[in-house]
Amino acid sequence: MASNNHLIRAAEPKDVLAIFRLIQELATFERAPEQVSNTSTQLQIDLFEDRICEALVAESPEGNVIGFALYYISYSTWKGRCLYLEDFYVLESERKKGYGQALFDEVVATAKKWGVRRMDWQVLDWNTTALNFYRRNHATLDPEWINGRLFFE
Image (cartoon, rainbow, N blue to C red; front, side):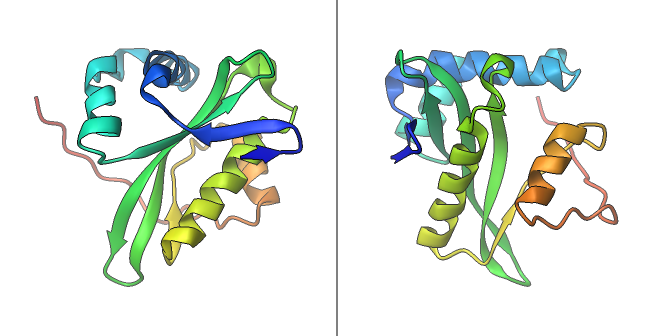
């Protein structure tokens, strides 16, 4: 899938280590590197064996993975099938070149192809660059809902 000379493609097993490095970089950017307990091995299993999620990668002209989007089907009792965008990240050195928009557009196209009724994701309230990106893409950013979590060992 080339979008204005930006190669966006489905992730392949050979991309797992690059995606995992980007996940770690994203966690550092989000000020929470110590919270990553997943492994590249488990990511490989989840993406390509159990297929509980999917990923797209942005590839540079040199063939390097410089960004990714990881997503999966979720469900809303109000809307039905939804797509949840778990992670969306482009290397800082490659931002403002259209890769993020091309990746996001491809995730939106996937959501439409899957026939989902809604696409969800989280964004940190201090990440103004991301907030502005989503606003430019006509996203609704809802400050009323608080996320709840339980962690299991």
